[in-house]
Length: 254
Image 1 (tube, rainbow, N blue to C red):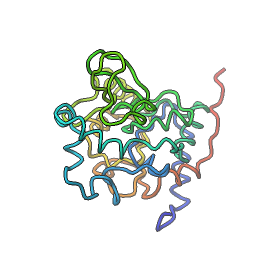
Image 2: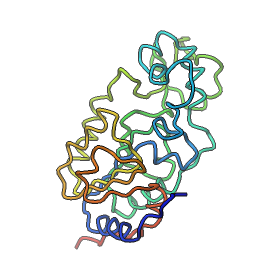
Image 3: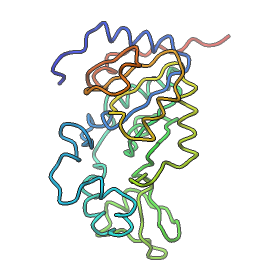
Image 4: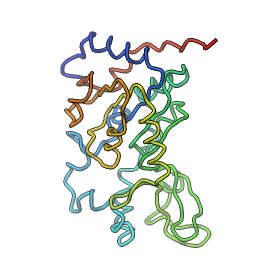
């Protein structure tokens, strides 16, 4: 529960921004999925703040994965998406907005597939997906079920190579085509709604510099460095805020 309820005046302003937009894009981070029971990394009770003999920022790095795959998977498997996790209120409302023609695209930093599970179709995954995995030797593809059931370091059934999740690790950059698609979506938006992101991870956060549209709104519990640029800043839960939004289908063009 939010300590201070979000004022109805802010909800009404967000409703107007959504209703008047012709090209709305959502940019989201871990806060979108914490309401589904997943732990974020930088929040008050985030994974990065938990005691660990090896900092998670080190574990989830390119070098550590290739040099210590057994130790990587011992820790990664504890943080991998819980199979029982289900889309939260934010995921569901965003999917509803897309179906109504109100939302053009979702740009997400998450790797949990919850937007797709909620029904969203145009999802740009900046940091990849834990649901896609591939053999580092032959490229064979594996789903998340194989990764969860595997013991120790997952190995390819075809060649015995080490399998890795198709996610962007530290020391790696998002694939150029994915980053370009995200930039195009943000640059083409007339309304950019940011939700559940601390906006400190680059190059993802740098995408806000590509936004030249008329309206920027940010929904996040802690402040972000981009708050001064937004016309609307809401301190609260992205799910609780969006659950108060009504979805009005776009008028049909003649």
